[in-house]
Image 1: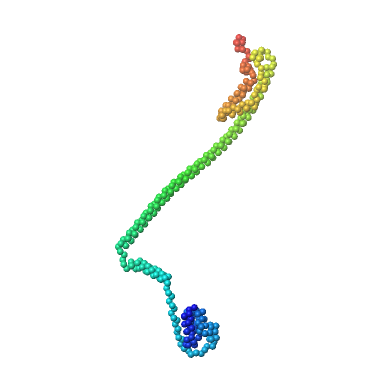
Image 2: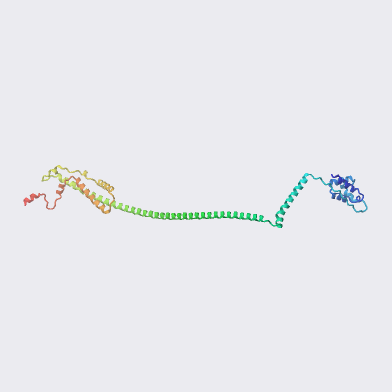
Length: 331
């Protein structure tokens, strides 16, 4: 608590001019002088006045007193606190900062407007501006060179892409042409194969028909040859008036089993067809006639009858078996 303020407040309350004033006015006046609630209570206690709880009762029964003008009471000025080194340091720092700020403001904004710049400063500014422009020109030149290189590279890339696309289109065109040509070739091969198939089937059917007809004719010829051989063997067994030649007596007639069968002849013919290349229809006809003749010759050779006897058996009209010298003498 501030003892000096409490003592001055007690003296104020004990003043006879103030004693007739209401208590609330006194308390408000004391509080207006900066006293706290505790200090006010202490002042009231020391001045033997009623506490704050008895204020309504006092107000309800005020004491009649002569109305006098209130006397203004002024407190004593507070004691100025002593300053230490911290206060001086803060004050000095603040003063230096404010002075430096004022100096910079005056130097940058006030002095240039009042005093014109010198020629040296203008030259320096001009030189710095020129250097900045030169630097900007160098940067712009580098940017332009880089852009030119980029455009050139882009043009080269575009040209390469165009050439590549043209090559690809040519390759695709040639590939499509080859594909279409191969398709046409395949179609032609299919047609040729179908034609060959039809021709081979038709040729085989014709060949089979011809072979069947030839086999039937060969079988007929073999049957007739067998009958002829049987008849000849019977005629040779009967005695004849004429004396046969020694060769006829000594030669024996071959048996029927030595005659080749139709199966053997067909096997020989198939073997010849496999060995010989395919020929034209005219050549086939000629070969067939030759085969027939060979078969006939083989059959005749296999009968065992000599050639002179076969020639003698083939008598011409008017040939009665008389030698020519005898006919001449008889004539």
